[in-house]
Length: 121
Image (tube, rainbow, N blue to C red; front, side):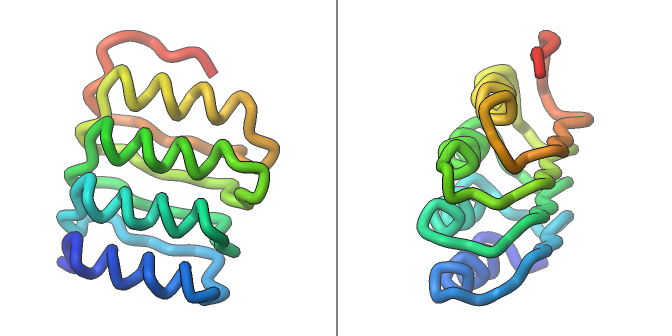
């Protein structure tokens, strides 16, 4: 498991212009801290089109930072998998609002999260 330290290292690489298009970091004990670092990197610049963060320890705080990055016009992310995380209603609402406005995001997976009410997409 790479944890938050590894996620931050990947975020630094993305910020440095690393041309990675697909990043799979599922089941790596990444928390909001690591997810937020990746979200901030996505907001700066990134060629990333697919981000898989399933089965980590990400809650609303990390989900909101990722949603903010996806809301930017410069975002090219098409697929985001946050399934099996601790994302609850507030994070799901932020992500669904962003998904409806995004020109690039076509797939958002929040399966097996801690969402108590249906979220409109």
